[in-house]
Amino acid sequence: MCGIIGYIGMQNASPILVDGLRKLEYRGYDSAGIAVKNGDISIHKKIGKVADLESILPKKIEGTCGIAHTRWATHGGVTDANAHPHASEDGKVAIIHNGIIENASQIRKHLQSEGVKFSSETDSEVLVHLIHRNLEGGSAPLTAVRKALRRIRGTWGLCVLFADHEAIICARNGSPLVVGIGEGESYIASDPHALTPYTQRVIFLEDGDLAELTPGDIRTSRMDGSAADSTVTTIEETWAEAELGDFPHFMLKEIHEQPEALRHCITGRTLGSEGTGKLGGLGLSPRELQRISHVRLIGCGTALHACQVGRLSIETLARVPALAHVASEFRYNDPVIDSNALYFAVSQSGETADTLAAVKEIQLKGGRVRGVINVVGSSIARQCGSGAYIHSGPEQAVASTKAFTNMVAALSLFAIQIGRARTLSRAQGRNLIKSLNAVPNKIEEYLANPGPIAEAVALLSKAKSVLFLGRGVSAPVAREGALKLMEVAYIPCLGYPAGEMKHGPIALLEEGSPVVVIAPNDSHRNKTISSIHECRARGAKIILIHEEGDSIAEDGDISIPVPSTDSMFTPLLTVLPLQLIAYHTALALDCDVDRPRNLAKSVTVE
Ligand code: F6R
Image (cartoon, rainbow, N blue to C red; front, side, top):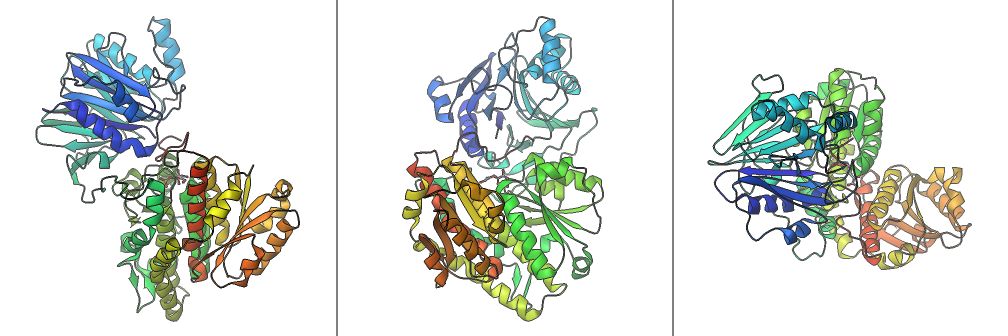
């Protein structure tokens, strides 16, 4: 989603800004723009990729202070005019803004009635006119921004550039911003890893903070003018440069990174002899684990599917009631929070607005919430204060793959840990740990020989719609397979618990309809076979994901075996062919597999 980068110092700003924009590309966006202070402010913006913006940039833009933005359209279509930065009518002030201004239309009407001319349809543009008017009224830059923000209802990650002042003013409320501290230079970004090539020393702004950046100084303050916490954090984990290596796309690269990523997630977090998981970052003693009344897991999209797998592992292994919630529903449904329950916020980016808001709601009502997060130092990770990083490494493709497997693995470790604190025997725990530790090699084994994916792709790429079915832990895997294919290949897909199929989706089936069935050799297998027969009786063609050596293979028109494992961990293997199917179908249909249309990697608006 929208990305921000800004620089003030001694170097030429534009190469740093363009480089920063490239690092933010993975978030998903539809236009990009840059503003550099050089006497006046020169602004260049363009719909399309950062490369499209570069193609219209002058060879050299003089100036050592500038801001740049990637926009993911919310208010107003994808046009050059709606791209950020936005400037005041006299060009003396420019802003870039992430977030949503809820009262923009009232403010716009008011400003227009006073003669202000707008150049875009965006909600953000009101900010630049408000700030400009405050400056005209005699306010200093920081005060002008503060006063403008007092009139705004909504969320912001905001950077303001002034033709007549050597400073960038930044403000955060609900949309992340991190300040980078250099030698005689300062940076600002929405995403810490855009800064790590330049500095590891950062200040994470909190909601309600403002920062005034000058070449050698950073001053933070609160909306009421009081001092803000300006603790300097050193980012230890730098994200590797986004290199494709031998892979044509990030999605394929990340699918193939799963064995190594999974090793990073589980290494050092198991006690084989005790048969337990050891997620020390949760800060929960066995006694506390015993007292948990129930577990709630909250996430969106792929993270939600990982929560749905996790909740089954927790109930099965620890016999503790557990539920998974859609974050956007949870936050708005005035949830009843139980202080004896344990809440998990699960997120790859750690920036998803709905999940972050759910965390705040839980904390406000006295609940305990732990993060299961990929991006170190992200907003949700910091808001939770404790939790478990999943250590997938950077996920650049918009479609989440390796984060799913590591979320499932981290939640499985928790399920074993809480299970052992309650009813799970040492012998059971030891078997589970042994099986989990064996999964990375099994993923490698599968990826080396992925089965008849091409046959499945040939069938799916002609499909009007695709039904994905599974039971037990395979029901969320079915949903994940449907989400993956839908988001990268734009084919309408439904992911359903197999038993629900006859209550509606069966109406979709006709001669040749593809149905993807996930049927590992677990206690649900025979019931799933019945669902397969119900589909076949209506002419459906079955793409069957099953465990190696299982005679169920005969029930598929196209059968794709995965290595067998403990029934709790089958999602870590059955999801792999679904990821590959989505990837190859998207390619067959000539879709932009790493940057699917309309989607953003980091969904920072509600
Ligand atoms: C699907 C996908 C999205 C994300 C969702 C949550 O491939 O990427 O559905 O899973 O937006 O994102 P995070 O995990 O960053 O909170």
